Image (cartoon, rainbow, N blue to C red):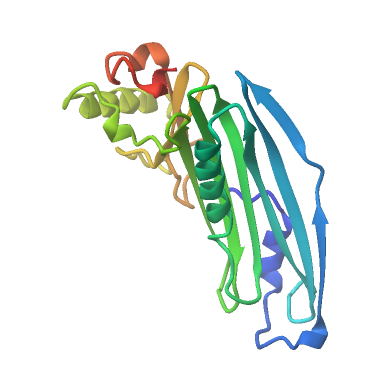
Length: 237
């Protein structure tokens, strides 16, 4: 997991105190960052970003940063579907928070959007005292814009052999691209996927000891997927 804010490294080094925080030692400020809008294939969305700074003398840096950024569909699909998808992402953005004091970031980015498919990935990080260090996760969601449902890969295979066929294809690609390093573990199963134009990206979460040259993403093109996924799969859109 790569955290974009370098001060978290310093944050770990400075953690040396604990205890409850009284209200008089807290100050809160919230900044709503500029909204960016995008329009693709008849579907529009905007990115909503907020950042809240909570002053706290018990924090190693004197404050906690609460940062959230995620896309919200604005138009181009049925209102019921739009609400369903937007609510799903809003709930997700609130999932990785501390129950009381602490720090968190959540960032979701659109990877692909059309009038049929909406794919995004996200990263989250949180530090909730008395944790010894921050924790984090990453994942992706790919929505069917007709139903608002997350598309599960196992429901898209053309037949019962397709899963093994995809796994073999990905493994061949990994072995071809992987650097000769003992620190690069070969994982037989990807952790999640997201869609891009004319391809799917399969993501492998690397272990902390893994070399920086290790493969973490494998791209499988639309042409390669045509004998693996059902012809009418929205993932081939």
